[in-house]
Image 1 (cartoon, rainbow, N blue to C red):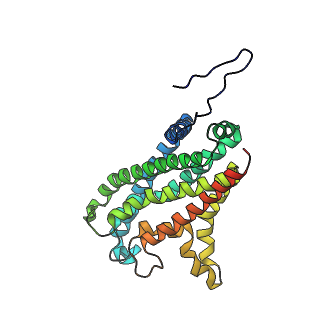
Image 2: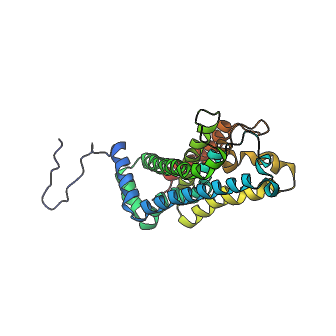
Image 3: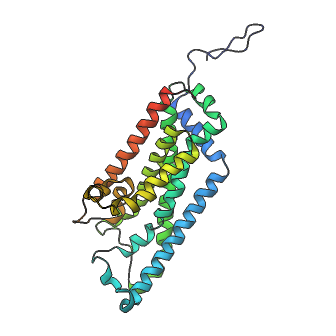
Length: 282
């Protein structure tokens, strides 16, 4: 063990070989993430919202199947439509809002309070800080999405049981649809983390995330020139949603190709955040 000597009239100095390991930085980031009391509550409420949306979706599907003369019934959907899986994972649409906000504020919150200066002083190389934050938001978003889908399935299946609809995990595409929601939320969180690191401003980061994941998908495909229709499948939210949609021969991207595109967007955001984190002062 290295002893720290103190000369009269001088403050203790930190040994030159002292450094923070990545595991230590990861532990510190997890403590900072969970120390805010509102964070567990927000994630817990997000799971409840996902369960509620799953129940509402299952009830809607049941109503549709019960009233084919009014709604078109099962004929209004593809023959291979996975009713149970789609109902269980429907809550990801709302969950991505929370995950995007958390991805932004996990870094911008430190800039707001000034705590980032202490963090970067402890880890001068800086990039381990971003990596540790990425691990934390990945775990939080994946577990939140997984719980929401799993509990959503438990609530949705009884509402669909009158139509002999079950959740068959051996069916092609079912497991992917269920895991697609938490994987999608991970990509949303990482993209938002990169944006927050670049902008260092909470409101600005959230605005960009909302623009990318909610506004553009509604506007971009409906613009007149063919360029917008041709490129819309490559928007992060549309591409990532392919995981939940399953195999579609008419789709431009396969489910994994779509998720790869979404991860590429997240990687670009994180790369931009990493470059600016290294170059700018805290």
